[in-house]
Length: 222
Image (cartoon, rainbow, N blue to C red; front, top):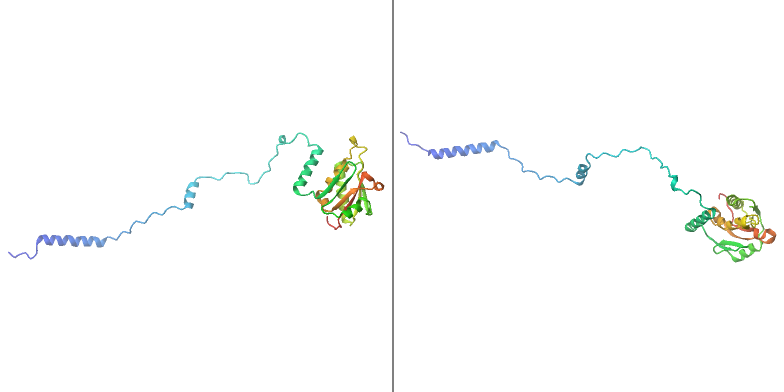
């Protein structure tokens, strides 16, 4: 019987080691797990809005029909409308004339107007180049006429004109309505930009029933 050269136990151990090495060569190394990516704000928004549908509405904008029940049943009195218009002028800075008003006499001028020229106007020393008579007109008609007349006069280069408003002798309670409205009309709208001064006329030009109006040097296009 031949003697054994190797220990059987050692031989079994070597075989097991070779098998483990063969198994390890046949397997690929696995990559380490990647950290999870945190969702950004956009992803959160998209997830939150998923399933939400836009509201369906008309393609064209439609004007709302006003409820007539919220409007006054009757128009405001004319005096109230005038007061509202005057307040609007004050807020917008349209009132830029210094006014002196009494029962018989009215005068006004732009700020800083030469007193010497104002004195000449009051005395009727500027030649009257044109005039308009407002007798028999309503307040609305008179305002429209005076605006047109002054703008035309300014466009023609006239400097001094006469406006006959009357004394109100034929009006209700003998109140000179047009005379009272004239200062308001002269200090609002485009007219206020062309009026330098105005004053009650001399007796031979109508006295307390008329006023002189001194205009700025005219230019076309007003």
